[in-house]
Image 1 (cartoon, rainbow, N blue to C red):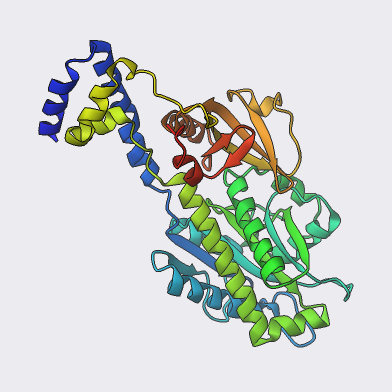
Image 2: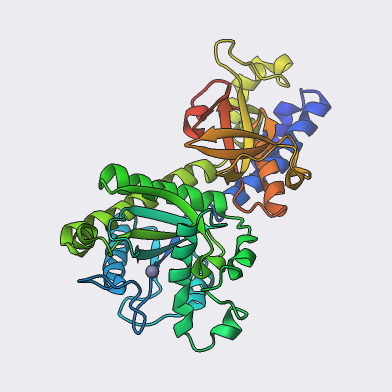
Length: 402
Ligand SMILES: [Zn+2]
């Protein structure tokens, strides 16, 4: 390393002093970020939570109990992940028919520093014609149906012995109790929504289930997790055909493989967008590997400060996405007052909010760190060509990528 720096100095000493300082500054700024970017941006641990168990059967259908179906589907999902994604550790909150308190399920995920939490359930309602699959994220319920789902799932705490202490006297049957839960703002909401969308896409497009889409409500089991978290409702065991499907071998295999594929796709997207180290500039490469880049740099010394941009390719704009919302929020909203250059774009019916506009990836990554420090733990860099969001992979292949 020292030799590289000496060689580089001899070579760079021909440049103006400020250019040398510029290069050093670039290194100082970008190298620590590269280390940061590589840490904690891989999805290594998933906690799979089969709902209910033991004395709590969950929903009860004509032929089935929720606790049995969800345990089976959860174990299969975990097996697919273990078999196909060996770099991921799978942890279950239960692997047999036992009662686990809701707060304990979240604690298992938090204690194991999980990157993703997936709680698996089945639904049930009085109207036997209602069917379909839906995936919830923690949030403010928008309708009575979603509130009812949360009430049913949260009722598990009534079987817990120290529920009053554990949940501050929370009454799962009182609508008023959900007002406090609705104020909850998850740092991981946008990522939870992405995972939930991925699961719904698999359920509907690959398995052909009726799409009840991504929903939100106040679930105690999601309330305390500190990572992207979703609660899957596989279907209604109060609907006889859906119950039969979920009881069948085929149904369990399909639903488990759908959750596995959704997890895999979420993991790939997440890691692609977050984990790649920033591409080194030519100046940085000259320092790290002077023999390779020497001639290249010497050839273009007058323009070293001004990278050549191909006229034919549109310039890229890097932004930091920090929030996804189902409803449109004005960029002048109070909650954005501390953020710079807030903009939004629409994708899949959701409004995605970004801060900052940069022509360098490394500058956007600095801004990402800043947003993380401000509490937007799941902020990540996105890249646009004109008004169109493109993948980081596509951007890296462009001449205008810096
Ligand atoms: Zn349940």
